[in-house]
Image 1 (tube, chains in turn brown, green):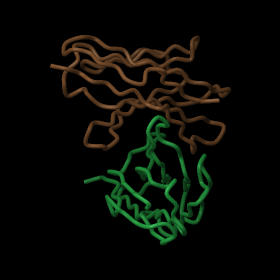
Image 2: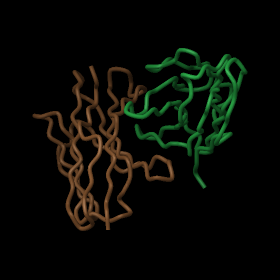
Image 3: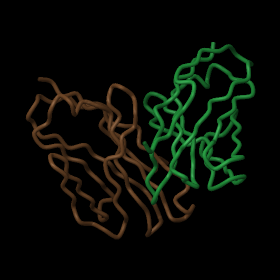
Length: 116
Length: 110
C-alpha cells in the first residue's frame, strides 16, 4: 500500500485563485515527519516545509499554508492567490521513526498549472 | 555555498555498459541517499547511507550499487544498465531530518 497518496495528478487554476493540494499518509508510527517539496519546470527539488507528528499547528508562510490533521492522516497544502511562478510539481513525503527516519516515502506528485 | 552536486547531469548510454553517477556534498552531512523519479511514481529511494561504510537498501535497489568511502561522496553505480533504468536520478543529503537534493541526473539507457 502507498504510504503517501496524492490523489490529484494535475490541477489547473487561473492566476489569483486559491488552490489546495491534498496529501494523505499512512503510518503506524507515533513519531514521524511530513514534508512538502516543490519541483519547478527546471527540475530541481526545493524543500518547502517539514512538520513533526507532535506538532499539529497549522503553518503559514506568505501565500503558503499547511493544514496537518492527524485524525484524517492528512497534510494539505494551500496556495493563496496563486501566481504563474507557482506552476510546478509538488511532492508530499513521509519519514518514520521506525527506521530512524532513514527511509523517505514520496507521493506521486501533483502537477499544478497556474494560467495567467 | 552549501550544496549537493551530481555528475553528469545528462547521460546517454547503451545496455550493459557500466556507469557511475557521482554525488558530493559540502555540508558534512552523515546521511546521504539516492532516488529515482519516474512519471506517475514520484521519487523512490534506491539506497541510503547513514555514514562512511554504512549503507542500506531503499525500496528499489535492484540493479544498483553504492559505496561510501568518504563522508562527502556517495556514488551510484550501475554495473549493467538496462532500459528500465532510464530515469531521473536525485542524490540527497540530510540535516535535521530534512533531505536536500542535488540537481538531478537524467539517464537514458538504449
